[in-house]
Length: 232
Image (cartoon, rainbow, N blue to C red; front, side):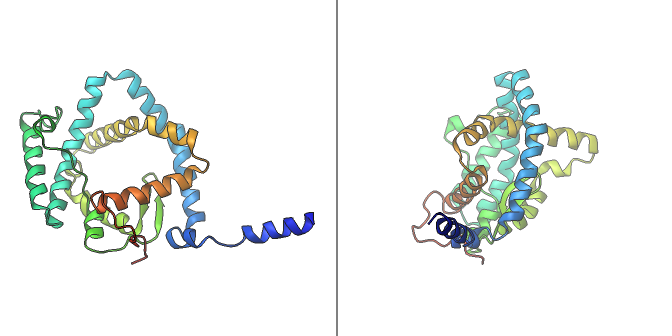
């Protein structure tokens, strides 16, 4: 009986989960990249982010976050237009103009207090809104969770990122490095929660990413029967 049970369990373990095969066909490879990224994060990014958080006053930290968020609004506005969200385009343009002037290049989020809320748009969401499927789930080296559509869509967004037009290499590396560290420091609480709560952090990150992307593409109202993660 024991031998039969072991054989049965072994047979069950070898059966591929249809859900896994559909959304994450390169799961083994993705897990290896995830482990690599996690190692880099624990050895470098997380300690630097913790040091940055400890050494930086909250007001300064908030100003840095606001500054980079303001630059991101350029990408948001462009994708507002591509998705024909013209009312949101006007709101986001006003937000960018107010924060870039009265908010001292975005350091102070002046616009939110006036009712111009922050939106999240990128070219991956634009393609999704146009009906392009996500394709298979991917984990990109250093960048983390993505999918085929979003990975390709990140290229046009790069051309809209003002940081990529900084000519001096040392200046670019310094500003880009600050953005990475600031973003990682903002995620310290979330990563601690994932480490403590998730039985399988890889699956948790993957499923959270896919659900988040669907939520954003449909502006918080995804259809219940949507097959967003079909290959194409």
